[in-house]
Image 1 (cartoon, rainbow, N blue to C red):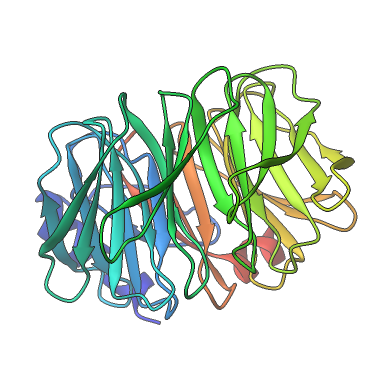
Image 2 (cartoon, rainbow, N blue to C red; image 1 turned 180 degrees about the vertical axis):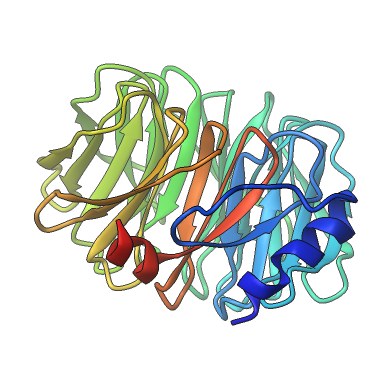
Length: 323
């Protein structure tokens, strides 16, 4: 892994100055290039590529090993709020406040198609496993299911009474979870579009949802500063993780499901042991409010990003060991 040794030269190449983040435990790289906040980051299935969404109206594709920005994806007319790779890793979807979802060829960086139908800003986009459709959600209080090959909207899911801030497919692709600013998490049957469960417990707006790889656990996070765990089959609560001192903006499970990462407006990223609910480590240092954190497919690295526009790469094992 060359991230640590390449950090200074990469910062010079992208920002013109080496910068100084100090000796932050577990931090092995910083990617710079966006002008403004980075609301979302996502790894492809190989773990060699990282995508980022920017308030500068671009999405970007990064080579994790070298830190090089491979493509700047331009076309959106407003903030890019979310990014997601398809299961094969050859297509990237981006969601934007310009009310569209755009699909991009990962290899060439060329735009494949524009999906239109949302009547207000699109907040989130997600691909399911191979063979599954594409989902999007946003300020118009709806979720939309798309055929990514044709660009057709297959169905529109309604039920939330406020913005739908995040969505996540279950591992089999038959179940879709949504996080609502109406303080509810909803579980949907993807094929029929019907709501199966409405989960309540958060006391404020909900920002994020994530399925464990097994599909037997669902996590949600919100402005009440808590992370709540749910049994998606029965639709009942399974635990609460507390420790953040401000809104939790995103949650993501590790590939083996044993750990959970959370990004918060309290300027930290936390790593939790799911079984015990114990916080293993707090990743911080000189960072801004954090909007997104996600594990790589190997589970040994974590990417996080926030309002300062920097994407940080953390060595998870080192952070936990030294925390």
